[in-house]
Length: 69
Image (cartoon, rainbow, N blue to C red; front, side):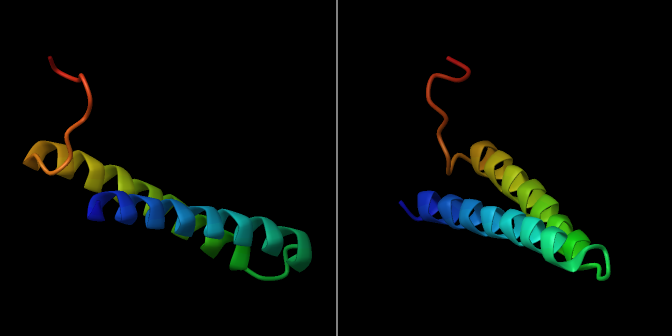
């Protein structure tokens, strides 16, 4: 259950950064680098989430359904 909550929290933060990037892109009109920072955070969090899921599968904490059977 804790793993599910961590993954959902990552998704929420990733979507928040995606929305922030869109908002900054529409309001700043290229005058600041907030859009780049928000989207960079989104990419970094997405990569970290993928690595954590892979690590969880390799260590046996996460059990994917019907994979490898």
